[in-house]
Image (cartoon, rainbow, N blue to C red):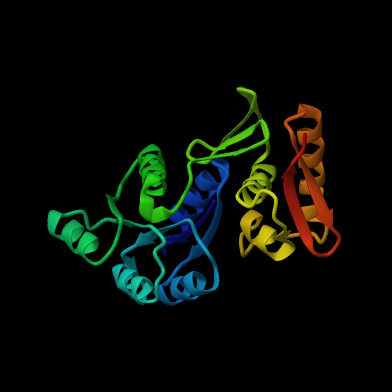
Length: 224
């Protein structure tokens, strides 16, 4: 799951990014409206967390711009401007949710899960392949009802592959799904994560395997 965080306060942005990563999400960070617009145009996100008070304007103005370009990514506004009138303005301009600062991260996470359950998010909550089940809402993997523990990067690889079971996923698409824009990435990092995940799936005998084409990408397919 890939999130765009638009927040100009460095300490809060750092804390939120760290917390989101601990919940198996890739989080890109923009500190201005201009940067946020560039990111939203260039990348595909599952949700956007948007501050209003940005150095180059009201973050809320980003929402109608996105909608006008056909971008339906769910947007949650995070702001100190929590009056009823402010919330109404935010929702009327196309935001999907509005959370006033200060807030508990647990509430943010719950609201984010709720956003991704809405039809507008076009987000299936549970994906199945063979005897493997991935619950996107709770970020949990199981095989025949037994939990399978995976590190964050491997879980992100699995998510990207299971969303396109039986089809090749290009390396570039996998890199986008697994790594943030400012992550330091070694040349063989993706292949290392895929290799470890492949071994775990084989050990679990979950009825799927990962095949790769060197230099092209990987696909997850069901096996008898």
